[in-house]
Length: 333
Image (tube, rainbow, N blue to C red; front, side):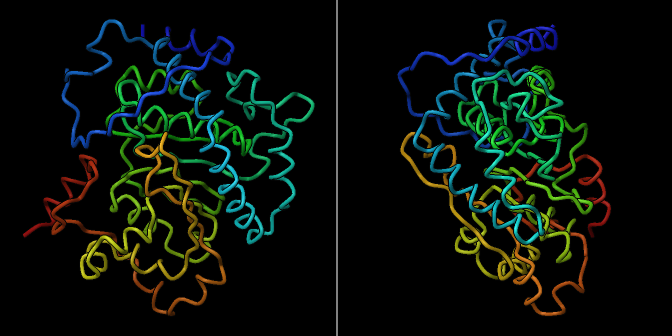
């Protein structure tokens, strides 16, 4: 039922909505695991179905698109991605041309082509070379902050002309309804908890990871621990400089060694802050890894490829996969 309703609603044209009175977003709760029928569970509420959730996403998307924050954030991201393309020897004019050719009022229901493009101006799927992976977006059916973050992701895919079929998403908190909605939107929902351990496999990849636990970033870096792989990555997520400032040096180096080691090899640009979205995109930066900086790191930086072990980490801030948690338990004393 949820999948059918979501698919039917997603097929309808996305129309601009009338301006609504904006209310400050509620702070996102920090959930460790999701009870089967907790209060606020979209599947426990008979008034919430796929069509309702999709309508709320459309409204959030339109509110975001006309906001001052979006125009400023887009400018910031555009500059960062242009620099990233330059080091990959990609045609840097392609990005600005793609952004200039967008028609954001067109229907985004075609997951096989870049949403927002007119037929005459559209690029071939993946023409810019990027793929996108989204971790930890949260329960967007009930959480306003998570819904705004999803709306940002959809607009971002449009601007970069990344086909939705080239975007993979995962959060262990997703309900069956939310998985159905995401599938109707055309993105691919991962079937298992990777714990951030995904290799870019030589392909330029943008990781969208807002407000995720530090271990998730550390796992991602470990999975791509070479100058070649890191240079193909862009991470939109928690400020690495902010992590360095908040965590004790010994804790950062012991528990999150790959984050600690890569600090000298990255460039970071913070997203702008506005009152309207202060709880949604706070402490968020765009990170990329210039080859020149990575090559200047100490030679022994790349010698160790030991998989992260968080047995002694008191505040892990990620939900482990069952296989990973079992292996960690068996490896303990």
